[in-house]
Length: 179
Image 1 (cartoon, rainbow, N blue to C red):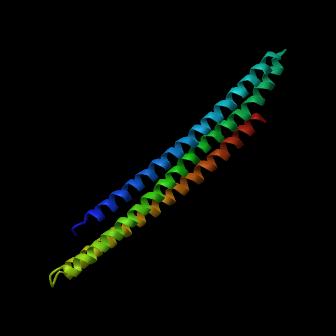
Image 2 (cartoon, rainbow, N blue to C red):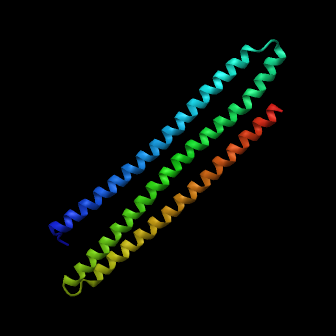
Image 3 (cartoon, rainbow, N blue to C red):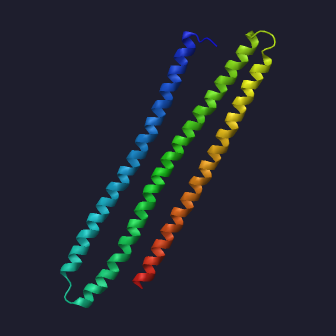
């Protein structure tokens, strides 16, 4: 169970690499979010300019009512699309982080089992039962983690489906209202 300086350095290196990967995933997610926000801001500005120009060309109340109806639909669709895009970026980033965490957990479990195997080789006679109990506990924890992980993935998939359904429903309802 004692670690040599080389093992300690290898562990530190692996932890540093994992931290760097985590930071990279977080930064990539932030970058995608900022790109989305900038693109949306540019589009909103261009739409605002276009709508302001259209308002200056109105000559009567009927034209104003018609312009109001034609502006509302694309604006609602763009807002709905933006919300869905924000969710997609956040979900993708979370998925990448989850994958990294799963890799780290698997590696940790492998190291624990390897360490236990080494302990068993140098353990006094009769300690096999204790080691087997620890291995059984590790297996139970891994099984619980797998079940929790699967449940979280199902929840994320269900949330994704609900967001998509709500998006479609909002766009459909706004089209009905505009018609």
